[in-house]
Length: 428
Image (cartoon, rainbow, N blue to C red; front, side, top):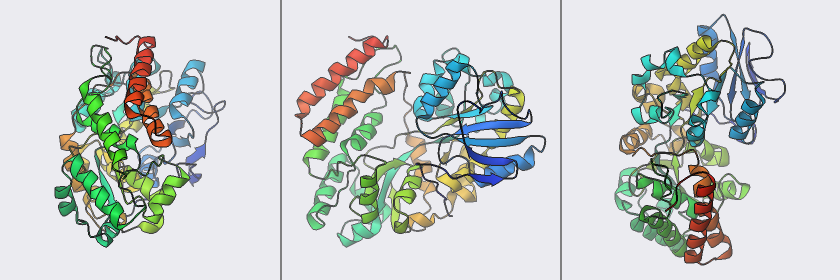
């Protein structure tokens, strides 16, 4: 199985007859412009691959689907266009980290239950489906994919350092965070300048999700100062104190260089992180494996397709959307970009459960499918991202300026509470 990768920094245009991936301008794009038989899909860089777009073309000969690839802040672009009230697409993606926010803006979208969503609900994982369900029962999105996490690692670097390198062997050796940190110390002792942690945020973001709750509870109360967050914070600080932290910001040239050079031979990530590694370090193909990371898997990301309110033909948009998200097409998208299907039926399809060349021929779907079964659903408040931002900012200060961790924790909690109060969240 080969997975293709387009740069996150900008997708190139690809024309498929009437199906085209093109750049998008705010003023002239959307369902209100152009040919009435042309349906417009908004997606972020990576977009849908050739196979799915071709399948849509063959299935719906009465329309053409134009995929507009939107760079930059996708959420902001959507919000601005909704506020303007014009230029909206017929179908748009919504990222997993933004779905809670848009559920609070449900009037922006068609209620897909009225278009037939209830008939296909059983196709998808319940917990993922519910992320796009509003409190009053409207369904604003259908799942594209899920983000069960695992540990990606360079087995050649591990072999050179005399560390466990086979997936089952390594998994057994790192069931706890402490064990993983000790392995990191052993690695850096044998190969100086080689780190098992990208940054403290990667540990923190995984560890707090493992608690099964976040920064705001179902009652709209701030809980970011409670033990489950502090324990995750302490783990991140412990990784930093252990000297195994590369302190590399994600999606930067420095980070890509470290991955390519083998100085960052391991990283926590969802299944879609494979595409990042392929982009950052194409010359390392075949040298990676994946296994269970310390503790239980969590979900990071996993997106949705939605239909904006005011789309010219919501019924036809839903037909296209639901076809694009059937199990077969989700399997094709895994082959294209590493997006792990939200439809369990796809997990046994050859496009998903076959060997992954970049991962040394490993059948990686076995790892991600097992991870998906242990993911603990998290309540997501529309303001969760804003509320947790100070914690990540303060961890970066600990890394870059050696700020006292306890002072950083105190400042993070204070800032988070202020943001919470400003957002109408109860603070005790």
